[in-house]
Length: 76
Image (cartoon, rainbow, N blue to C red):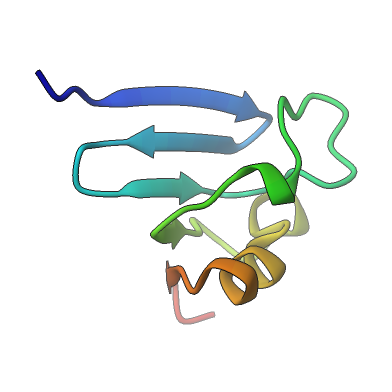
């Protein structure tokens, strides 16, 4: 039976895994001493950014470029 999972990755970062997609939230992974994984360890379909502070935006751009993930966030 498929299931959903929420994984805390450190500070502001979470990974939601569903049968349909992986959703990465606020991927501040590089330089984050509490991060459980690095930016090359995730392969999201979507990246959600709550706001543009460095400790939330984090590795959004390199992860999106590497994976082709759709990025969703506020306009500014």
